Image 1 (cartoon, rainbow, N blue to C red):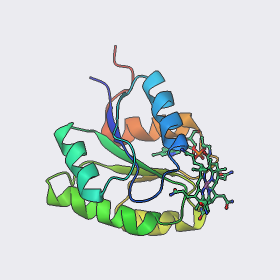
Image 2 (cartoon, rainbow, N blue to C red):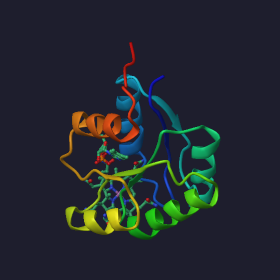
Image 3 (tube, protein in one colour):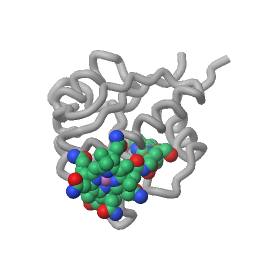
Length: 134
Ligand code: B12
């Protein structure tokens, strides 16, 4: 079984082009991608991740509101029994905020310049699953 990723935008940030592009690329590498669109609350995204039996949940930001949203997402996941589902974040994330994001419980932070190969390597290591099972 391959990696199942639930992806969605949080809050008012509609810079979804990056996440839609990432979703397609991840799908083309063999992942099962469930893309739930814009304007989600952390609770909605957490509920989708648990309902879809996700191996990872991914969010993307074009605006600098990611720290509060990510903190709330990690809390929301714990509230619905999804505390073991790792959170990854990408988009326009500043390198100097990586430590703060890790501190609120984000497992994978990908800043501009990270390659898809690096994300795939992280995903396989973090979930313990191969993207292209034989
Ligand atoms: C296109 C764009 C828009 C479009 C968005 C269209 C859409 N549907 O996405 C529109 C015109 C709607 C828009 C609106 C606004 N925008 Co705008 N926008 C941009 C712009 C020019 C490009 C962003 C983009 O699409 N890049 C292309 C994608 C493919 O790249 P990417 O996001 O980096 O994604 C790649 C990787 O990062 C990675 N990735 C992405 N997500 C994820 C997630 C995970 C988990 C992983 C692993 C990887 C990953 O994979 C992707 C593919 O390689 C940027 C400037 C810039 N050059 O970045 C400004 C920018 C993001 N916008 C900005 C602003 C201010 C706004 C507005 C507030 C403007 C206004 N006053 O109305 C509004 C806000 C709208 C809202 N509510 O969100 C600012 C944000 C500043 C900040 N960070 O605080 C920027 C940086 C411009 C600037 N220099 O000021 N915008």
